[in-house]
Figure 1 (cartoon, rainbow, N blue to C red):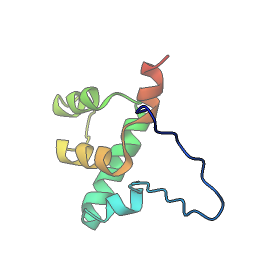
Figure 2 (figure 1 turned 135 degrees about the vertical axis):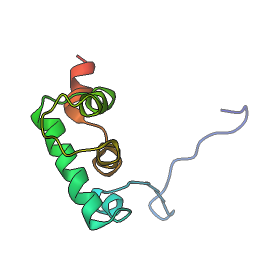
Figure 3 (figure 1 turned 180 degrees about the vertical axis):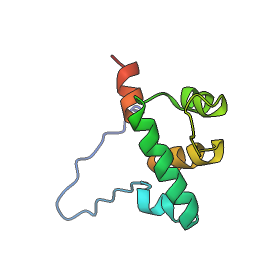
Length: 96
């Protein structure tokens, strides 16, 4: 705070403005085709089913065909990350 300047408290008559930028899942889905969203949702569900691996580990699992008969490709996993955000189960495990 600069010398000589005080923060004045807001009074009830003064306008108070808050701006928040928040991307919702629906907005994120809008950037993809119906089929891309379907494959991304499948990738998201599989990631949860196999124990919440990190993005890097999940990409490695799919690339090396460690999941038999898995139809996913890298594009599906990256789209899932973009649409739904990072895997929370993985993040919670890292912060313990």
